[in-house]
Length: 515
Image (tube, rainbow, N blue to C red; front, side, top):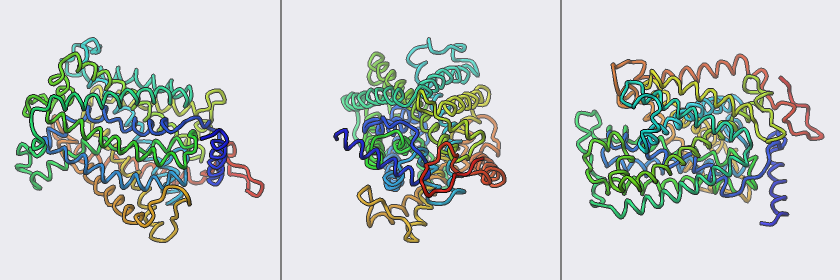
């Protein structure tokens, strides 16, 4: 594309922004690969599969692999709906703004609040993945104790996680261009490492594909038989395949996002499905002993080290560290754009400060710092209460699925009322729009319920059983949702509206409201 066409596209995107009531403030510097990298690094196949493989195998056996294509199909329906929205509304804080445009300011605020809370917890959860990998590379990374003490691992995880959060805070504070360069380089390393890992595991296959039908009798004694075990194990896949909307959340900093964001969303999800599915498949076919207890404890780290040897295994694990780093960077970046988008509408405390864009770095700096501090504070909970942290982490994923549902459900209502029309000449599902949207809503509701179901394996895996942990999803989401909405209804809604400093100025538009 020539410079002239880039300029024309940028002008069109700025006009689209003005239609939503905003003036352009963030610098458009991101190209196709940058937006694709943002989406795929948030999903982060190496991070998710290495962090959660053990959970899937221990709860569903090798047959848990089938949850990967199941989750992909469901999330693809959601992603296709998002593609239409990304083409029409290429705007920062995509989930918040889409929910607002489709369901009104109340639904928008609730979707944004859910997503923002979940994103900050996710930032902490991803940071904990350092502890799963670094000490397996070298005991040198176990700074707290020797790893055998009751709280050694949890305390060390907080230390390593805090260093990572500090790094992503600094990178994001210095602007989107630096973030995009680091993120893109990290994603390139992750993709190359993932493909090499697939080839190496495939070369060490010791059994046939029938291995992925093995259930190890894990359905015995369950009300739903193996289906119950499978639904529990499917969380290992559901916890990975989300965050593809990040590609569109950088819409105000991307070149021609109306065309590029939908492609980036689909490419990120499809690439993650193919690469992740093959890694999981060949890991199950290549591991020396499918019944080894380490498979349900150390997961893919054990598979890599036992199958490929310590030297190659450690190289792969270093690539996993890179993947965790860029995943954390993408989660932090998306959280900042969401906070900025909500603050620009005066929908957060101290909105005028949170929405301020640094003239030097052309990025919102204060949200980067505050979100980083909140993530570290959440990490500290993990030191003495790791079980409670695991509950909160699980709940964060549910809140993201619910936030997605607060977009797809209003979109379906608008379709049924004949009020939703994709932007002409851009991504459109055409006659498939309604059935895809219906499946997306049904999938989102079903998986949210599956994620929240009060299973001991998820919400009270160790120690004494507590009802408040088992029902933690309903309690926590109820408190966050109802408490947050009460705050909005009684306090914030009276002041909501685009802040004057961020409003698009048109000759015939009334002055925007101030707080």
